[in-house]
Image (cartoon, rainbow, N blue to C red):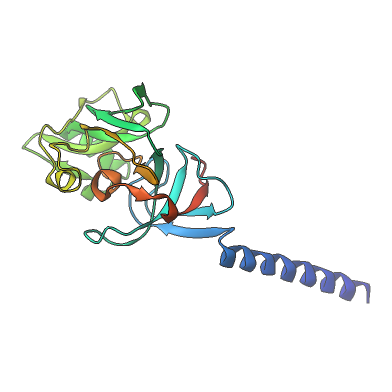
Length: 224
């Protein structure tokens, strides 16, 4: 009899928790999603899960989910870092991000690096996918690395693309690219997003500004 009461109580509490979780998910208070791409590495790993909520404010520099409606690219819910809000001036100069003339370098982001064959082989040995290392000639490759991933035992140097990106030009009508972009001011009612994997992210440089109303949630896991 005593064991039966304990079992019933545990079952009731478990049912209550499950019910709360279902309500939270349906209301958007708590959502989870699978991230198939590497656009936010190293913060959000490729093929990982995130948890987000719609009850926290959409603070600048946090990872925010939004509805992507540009018909030239796959539509759906995208997750990136909120970099600029109304009246912010955005400038990327040689891969460095400035907002309102202030250098923003507090995040562990990835950039394009030119590396030698020995470094490429080392990365492959440690688990980097072949599709993430691009050969540019007989001896050198381009890959995306964060400061924490750099290995001074091997040759590496930042790779800055000198050419105009036609996809960026299509949106902003300027001779810009991912590494040299702006300055441009965020219009009223709009948001500007960047992925932490700066040279491997489909973000506001290509999609254009995002309507504030299209922001749908803030990532609470992983920590960002």
